[in-house]
Image (cartoon, rainbow, N blue to C red; front, side):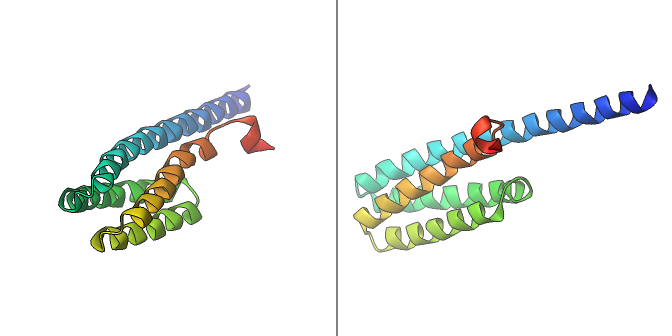
Length: 126
């Protein structure tokens, strides 16, 4: 009887941990996506000073979020985000609207994709 209770408690801890992890990924992903939307608007308007400020704010938030995400997700995803973010910074410095918007699109897609990839669904199992 006692081993059964231990197994049930451990299973509940694993399921609860998974739910908390997924919730954290979803909430941070939504925050980062909303910041990227603001940044994208400044880039579209070619308001490069504001875009630089928003990009710096995003970079600071990403540095905090990436430390948590490093423990939760595949490092390949984080490396891709870092790479795209560094290219975006370069394009914003050079006032290259087309390339910056292209990188913005890639960055938004990757950030929105991570919670979907980590969620518990049949397509992630099989």
